[in-house]
Image 1: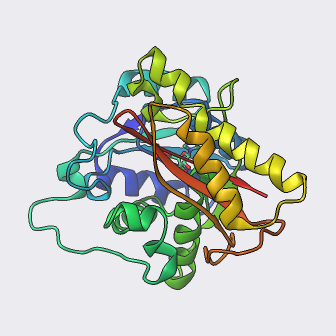
Image 2 (image 1 turned 135 degrees about the vertical axis):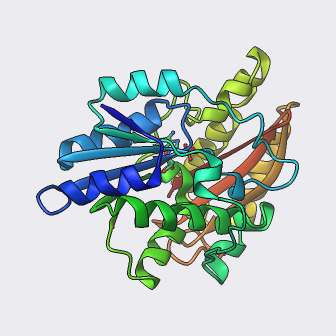
Length: 279
Ligand code: AMP
C-alpha cells in the first residue's frame, strides 16, 4: 500500500492506471471504523484500484464545532487499510488542499442542502461539496462509495455529480451499527461509559417509530411527538431535530409512506449524533 500526501503525486498515480483499471474511491475523515471498512470492502470487491482519502476537512466544520478535537490516528488508519488491501491512502495536509489565497467553493442550492443538517450546520454541505469536487478532480474515480449514515450528504453529492457532469458513479451502502444498534461513528470515541449507553436512544427511537408505523400509525407529527417523548426520558439527550421526509426531495410528509426517511440529530452531552432509517 502507498501513502500519498501530495496532489501532484496522486494525479500521476491515477493517470498511469486510469485507462486500464477501474478506480474505486472511499472519501473519509479517518479514524476508521467498521462503517468505513464496509465501504472499503465493497470497493475492493468491485474495483481494480481502491483509493481511500483521509482528510479532516476544515471547511465543513462550523465555528464552535469539533474540528480541532476530531479524532485522528493516521497510523491506525494505515494499518486497518493495509489489512483491507487498499492500494493508496491519500492524506493531504490542509495547506496542500487549501493553500493561502484559496477562494473557490461549491454549493448545491435549494432544499436539499438547506433542511435538516443544512439548517443546523450552515455552510457544512458547502464545505463537503467543495472538498469532494477537489478530491474527484484529483482522483478521477470511476465509482465512489458513501454510507447511508449520512443520507442527506449522499443525496447532495449525487445532485452535484449530476449537475456538474462529474464522471463518477455514486454507490450508497447501508449503515453499519454496533451490537446494540448505535450507528458507528468516529465521534463515538468522545463518549464516556454513561454517554455511550445513553447514545443508543437514537437507534431505539427509530426502532420505536418503525414499530408504531407497523402498528398502523401514519401521522408524521404524532410519530415525531412520540419519538420526542421517548427521547426525553434519557436525561443526557437533547434533541436538535427529528423529521420524516420524502427520501428524494427531503420534503416533510404529513402521512408516512413506504420509502420515507426518518432522520434525527441528538446531542448526547456535548456530542452531536445523527442517525436515520428508511420506512
Ligand atoms: P466520515 O469519515 O464520517 O466523513 O465518513 C466517511 C464515509 O463513511 C461517509 O460516506 C459516511 O457516510 C460513511 N460512514 C460513516 N459512518 C458509517 C456507518 N456507520 N456505516 C456506513 N457508512 C458510514
